[in-house]
Image (cartoon, rainbow, N blue to C red):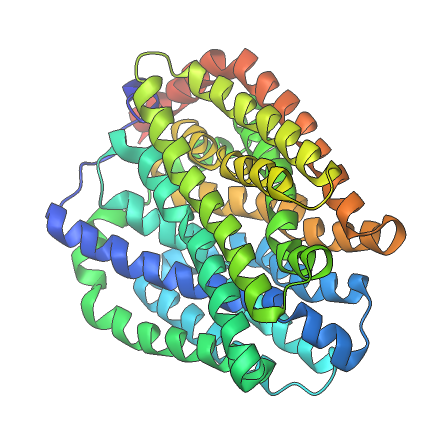
Length: 431
């Protein structure tokens, strides 16, 4: 949808070189990887914590879900604060906080201490996704929105791969406490390097696009005033309910149903998450390339991703352990987060350029409250009652609801784009 100029408003062209833009992308992407390494390393040591502390699956799910819950609750206020205080300083402080909190996780002695440390991890990570994507989008042309959004957000998948894979290895050789310590060290090093290279003075002319007082109110209303953008938030959040559940419980699934030890289960799960990340990038690129002359078709693609992932994952987890099951699960994981690029492009195109940071914070809020936070927890509740395999077979049915929400967005998209564009134009005329 990035090519749909009518919905891009008055987005300024980047004022930095393409080379520096990719440096900003690489470092911001690296911190996003650290974010998810710190978040997902817990899943790699689920079996060890369950055994050592005698935890239920519900308690394990809460340790994973509390991070996403804090991200959902704090992403908007902290994103607004970052816009005022400075995005580079804010991103640096966030990374330092989640890295130190991850180190504290490794020092925890019981469930309560671990839950408190994970709470701090969530605070540190709360606004990183929205502030980071706002910085990255600001240094690239508007026509690359779906591709850049999909590629950047895939950092979460790759960070999950590294967190679970490396976490499993460190836990097997040195104990689960060193798994957290290794993730913390990487985050601390990159957090110290980031502000030395990414300078606020270089990106400020691009990202500081706050409108005058007369333009602020109509711009902020575009966060929720159109049916399509609200549907984009909800559809994305519901689909990530499925994706988050798959990522959180895949190491335990491989451990329980395939008899793999912590290290091998972590690596096997990491392969599936890597497939998921590759799908996020490729599906975003396909969205830009295949639908260049018909923006609404991007929404149709999102619906297709939802329904196909649902069918593949349901069928896969319904089978007994074996090659056929793994193949179907892999195909489903490739598509399960494919809506990220199209949904991100919808949000960017249906909101004013001046508030894209807050718009993506709103998207992050809904993603976490509807998807990332409840997904692992609800799956844990189901697993305690019907078994983990059956729970993972039932969870993908949520994708049917997500597909219906995106279909609703498609039926209103053109009208909503016209309305948002007219509102933005009127606001500029009043300024």
